[in-house]
Length: 133
Image 1 (tube, helix red, strand yellow):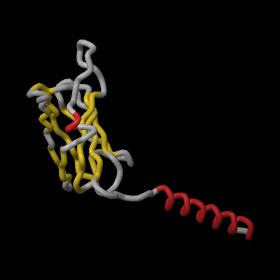
Image 2: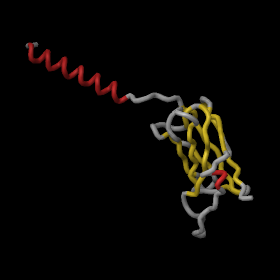
Image 3: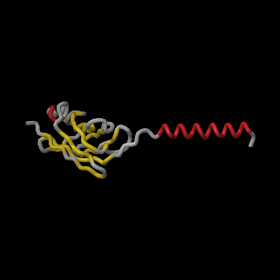
Image 4: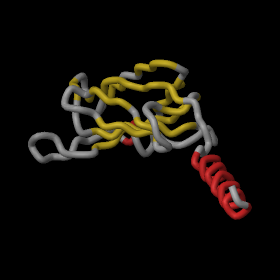
């Protein structure tokens, strides 16, 4: 192999290593999070469930309820679940109910959320029971 080919190979391999090192990003540990959201005892679809880690523990995770009220979280940085640790949880209406009226979620469950959950490694099930009173 001539000298130019060796230098080109060295540059190519070095460049690839730099690119791969930059693609890794910050690695966080996630716990799988699922559950069911009910409003006054009834499962509700079309709600947004958001887990915001307390402090600088990582990014937000988000999920949407299906018609049966079930949800699964997806981490904003990629992957299923939420970062391990304590989270403030909010639930907001993402759609309307079947009759066109928006689902009303009290502020104590969203903008002034009183909900907190501690995500652990493995599978976590957090059912959220919302009452309008």
